[in-house]
Image 1 (cartoon, rainbow, N blue to C red):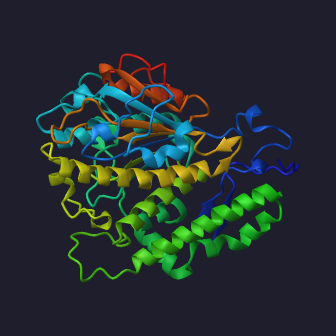
Image 2 (image 1 turned 30 degrees about the vertical axis):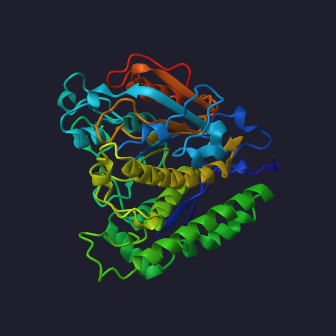
Length: 428
């Protein structure tokens, strides 16, 4: 590590003409000569992300046949094979409070709360508050954004609940997310006016960036260069999306700045999530890859049938195979996000080393709309507090809420219970 007597605050930002860009965690944000592990202020923070997908999974193509460390990757999870040491697959869990004759609404609302809507706020003051928002109460004040709720669905799911009766909206527009992370102004109108008047956000801070670079050691200078290049690239792609002509398309209520290309939309959102973690703008993200009862078609991967009707497969093998193609596609997109976190160095490891990401669904067999057993995978090591590299298969009817509680505990969120939880899963 480059040793310098100059010390940068963790809160250092680049400012210029209505823009402020946070910096990634740098070596020079530690006192000279002090190891990351030896300073609480310099230690990389815990980060949590919850990435959900609708309509469950084709479970025999999701769950490995073998338990323990010597499991074989399944077709749907195969894109995550490069991150095997960071991967924990958890099978056999049931979210009983989510079970309902009206499944789709319950599926979204109960994944991270493990409380039936009819019991929200009744069995306890926090009954119905989701795990991400419980975490935000404890660490949300440490960052500019207490939490970030995103989606690529035109109508977002209701995954995040701040109170038993108040859900948080999910942002679908990458442009709006970019301004929220890097723009200034009290309203969207103000931020747009600033952008029209002053041009590129990065251009406004580059003079100060140059002065900062002169103070940094080689490794920090390289880290800032890579980070600013990433911001520039995402800004360029957001601007391209904004300039797309959608007048000939029948897209009801399509927000300005949402790409027509589904691959581009996913990549932008995942890249913005990675930047938000890297710059420590937030430590809690909830992302819906699609919504329940989605009528999206995946023509980009050769599936012209709408997602929701296809999920009612009736055990038709051809439909199950097409459904698995969509689910594998979602995993590939997610794996690219994981790769970026793994390749972003931070302190004594990578951003992935310091993160905990739950990737899964609150539905099992989409034809039955059941919640048992749920497809759940954990990526990241939470500073070594998650073992990784294993498939854990629990007995039937084991509580999914115990997994959610365990993930909060592993990331040092002091929550005694959530939903119908009964204890921690020591093996995770």
